[in-house]
Amino acid sequence: MSTTVKLGIAACIVSGVTAYMAYVGTMTSWKYYLTVDECLADAPALVQQRVRVNGRIAVGSLDIANDRQRATFKLCGTNYELPVTCAGPLPDNLAEDLEVVVEGQLDAAGLLCGEKVLTRCASKYLPETQTATAARPQTSTEVRHR
Image 1 (cartoon, rainbow, N blue to C red):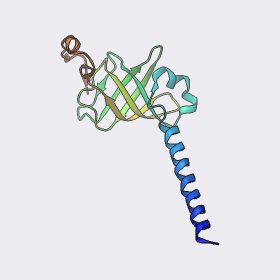
Image 2 (image 1 turned 180 degrees about the vertical axis):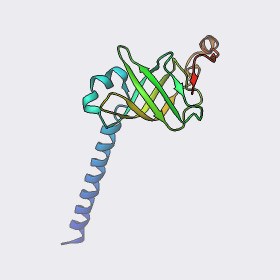
Image 3 (image 1 turned 90 degrees about the vertical axis):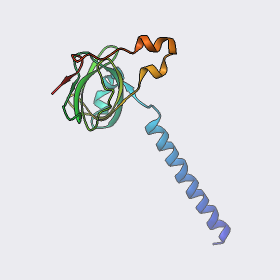
Image 4 (image 1 turned 90 degrees about the horizontal axis):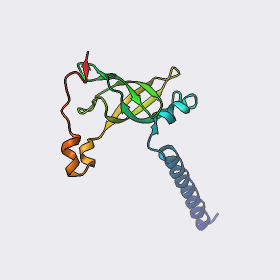
């Protein structure tokens, strides 16, 4: 077999592997997160799979351990609530009525076992005139510590 044929075969193999890896990468990360309602609608298919779920922390449901390594809360969607338990370091700005994305696995009982919680500072996304009215101090009764 000539060198040109060998190089052509090698180029086809490398191109094929690259195209396949690009396809797999885009299919697994095409959608950054699911909403609570989407997650619960597809719950049987999502059990024991890695998911990212977006929702708002229900008021009165946030319970953070004293060491800030564990938290339980409910994520609110439009129509449903999803119970969440998180293990690992928690964001400093984690609070009730805050929009978050939780990354973890959904168990058969419908509990999202989170490993990572992503928050954003809402004031960074508001015009300056609304920033002062959107920022409100957090009261001690909003978050219960164990």
